[in-house]
Amino acid sequence: MFATVLAELGIRQSLGRTGICYDNALSGSFVASYKKELVHRTTYPTRAHARRDGIRYIHWYNSTRIHSALGYTTPHEKHQTCLETQEAA
Image (cartoon, rainbow, N blue to C red; front, side, top):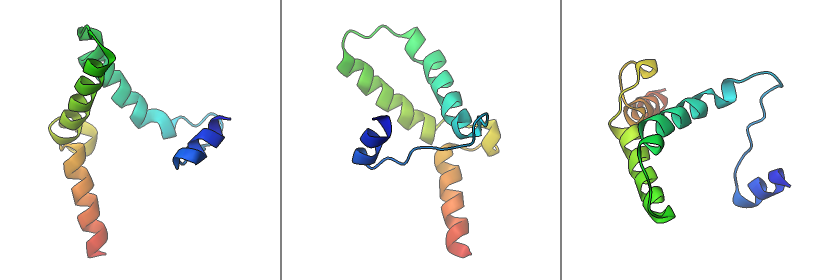
C-alpha cells in the first residue's frame, strides 16, 4: 500500500540493502536539526503557522546555513557547484 501511494505521487522509494543506513543518514540529520533548532523551541497556534515556519526553515537551511560536511558551504552552493561540474564534463 505504501509503495502504491508513492508510485501514484511519482515518488521513487529508497531501497538500500537491509542494515545499510546511509540512504537515510542525510534526511535523519536534517530532521534532527529541524526539530532541535525550530520545532522544540516553538509553540504553534495552528497547523498553517507550523507549515509556514517549516517552509521558512527549509529555505534558510538550504540557502544560508553552512555545513561542515559540505566544506562549509550551503546545500544550495554545493548543488550549484555539482551542476557546473556536470556541465563542464
